[in-house]
Length: 153
Image (cartoon, rainbow, N blue to C red; front, side, top):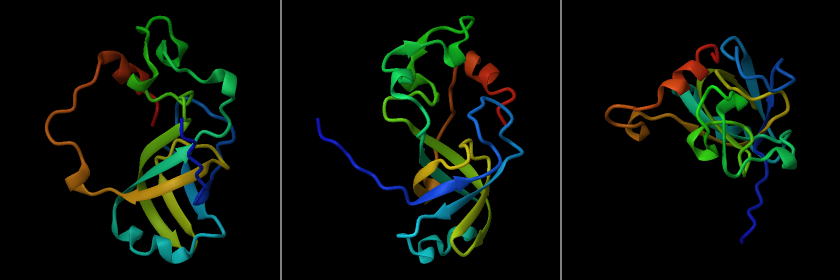
């Protein structure tokens, strides 16, 4: 198998120090660019209302990785489903993806809302949200996922 090496383009700064499942809506985060990334890389991002952030769950321990199925949030009341049918952090490659609200841009810092990553999390990429890349048609999801997300934001 081929190994892929990625270098963070920045790091999350916020008040959330431990991973928690709920109440992310009030958290304002700053993505501070890594020293090797020029601040010009962010130019124009503040003309978009939203961006997609790809980040690395660096604090998930190797022995906690799930490669099969589990109960979402380890809740036995919910059906066991595959790790790729849920958005848990214990994924094989530990990648997170969030669509965030762009608040403002200040030099090397991007201020955002609705990022569910803790302080110090490595950021791998930032992309603007464009309507043309969003899903077309109806979005379908199971009932348990609505329950899971009830207090998330």
